[in-house]
Picture 1 (cartoon, rainbow, N blue to C red):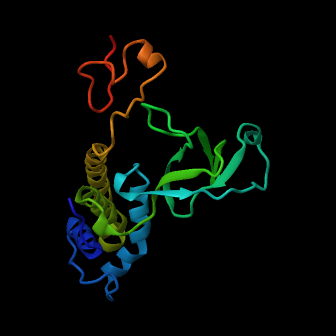
Picture 2 (cartoon, helix red, strand yellow):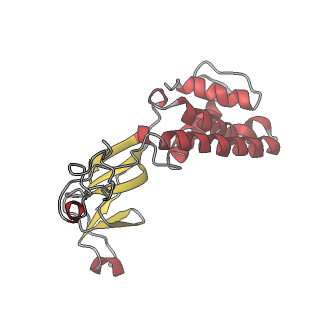
Picture 3 (cartoon, rainbow, N blue to C red):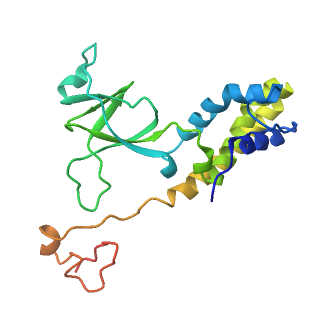
Length: 218
């Protein structure tokens, strides 16, 4: 489901609260100015609500030395900065993948820091973006209600619009999260060997083993 332009998104939000459409986000109108004021933070707020598959990035994390020591210094060997464009941190990618599990290295977050024992750690995270053309329409439909909520008071002065738009946003966001979650893998390949083979559970040894690597014990 392809996305649509930021102007179309803005006009969808204005339609929700019964306001006239705009031709550009930079035009000299009250509606355009108010939407411009909240557009980025509205988008980033929605992006932070889930680990969206369409807005993920991998990046080598920057090693730092915290200015104030704390109890975590004894638990973890390394401390890294959260990326500047991070909306929601997903995981530290391990150097060695663990078979049949979603690979994630142990780590903890504290403020703007990531604590882990991984050397030269690579992080996966949801990044800040306003490229609406790369976003699915289900997500943008949710954002349109959030954008409408955020401009409802300055454009209408009616508190009822704020509550109605907020309720609609939460409902549409839930649908978008559900659909996006369907893009995630539910099983992971299982390597043969060790106790798996000993119990007759490797994909290579079990007749009718699932092609996705699922194990059928004998």
